[in-house]
Image (cartoon, rainbow over all chains, first blue to last red; front, side):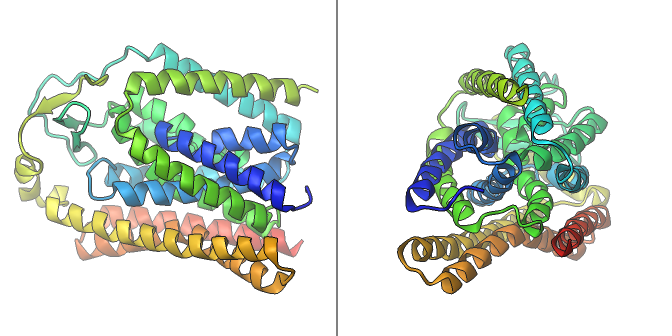
Length: 277
Length: 129
């Protein structure tokens, strides 16, 4: 564990700000950027990086969801249903993470990042088609006002078992790798379950707080969470996600998808290089 | 221009939800949903505010002074509040679903609470080693 100094805390604060801004824009939670930075750039042990990252992921989820609550963008019912799967996965991941070697976790991180990047690119032109404009969203579907098009968007949830399975895997990967898990859920919910990207991202960010808590508690109990550095990272991420939210509503979804994929390819390559040593 | 060609209608929010609300099996009325979103928003904002204050003051103290006790307490308090915020959000959701007699979702949120408790138990087991 690195020695805590004022300059290290400042570096982590800045990294948190960038990660938080990107995370809020992409609906990822920021951990996917913070873990590689702490692990690859600053040389923290993977588990210490994951513990700090999970803490910031919780802060992002709470901040972003508090700002979005009341706008119907978060699909509360779907979120609460999928949390059952994601919290179970996260709990199991948090426990197994204590016994897995760092190089294995790094390769897993690289693998997960590249898979998701490929999914995002292959689904760039995919559109959700609902034929009936007056469609009943059902118990789990949703309806929200889209600021970008000025329309009311209605959607129905398709392939629920797939959404549940993806949430379990996302929870598991979340606490193993210290990321939010939106990296897995958002593409699956968007591409295969009929949920518009904005609603998928908002619902995922909402669930991530519970997911990351189930994992972070285990790291905290294990003494892997350095409080001073976690505080610096959390405060940075708070600032960044606040900025990202201000700017995020105006960004186009296609641009978001391309940016997301590009970042994931870079992170993946770095993790494979480091994990392969 | 939107990427997702989902159904779009110009109908005002909530109006076309009326048939949904009439069916008790489907539960959730727009008013109940708005109430739940409001309560959840308040809980999340409160947790974020308290933890941010604790972490900011704790971080400043730990970097500027040598009093480890005060900064350590504030930093850990901030982290514990941060970790508790999503748990509190699940608890108020459970309460809200029970008030609405939406037993299916009340049960689901209780299961999530049990899973979070299992994590806390695992944390204590690790801590003892």
